[in-house]
Amino acid sequence: MIRIREDIQAGLAKDPATRSALELFLTSPGLHALWSHQVAHLLWNRGLHIPARIHAQWTRFWTGIEIHPAAQIGRRVVIDHGMGVVIGETAIIGDDVLIYHGVTLGGKINDTVKRHPTIGNNVMLGAGAKIIGDIEIGSGAQIGANAVVTKSIPSGAVIVGPQATIIN
Image 1 (cartoon, rainbow, N blue to C red):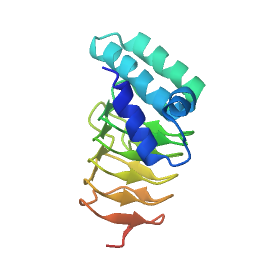
Image 2: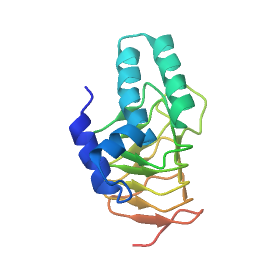
Image 3: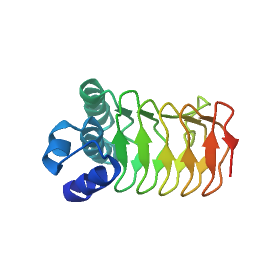
């Protein structure tokens, strides 16, 4: 379930400000939120929705990172400077994704369908990026700070600006 060594190695590789595994283990709210999400997700999948939501709310209180217990998150995901990160119920995040503070993976419809983004592998989501709706962000894409993305993005694309302009 919780892959402590793998997650710590990923965090050290993606955060040059962290100097040791012990420092990351003790002080990373992103790491703590992801580990806590694994517990909430397990509760959710066992049909214990209210305990899962309560657990997620406590995690939000302690870390400033809100992850719905039903969200699906891959391996070696790193949330760096995670304050204000919001990951919605039907979001799917691939492996080796780097998420900076203020990122929202949100929905744009109010219905019980897939309404949150799917993020491929090896994606970087810049600070303040808003990825909204049932769209796909292709593997290897980079979403710049404060980009607002409401349409699917191909693999390897680099997106910048509030109008989500592809620059490569």
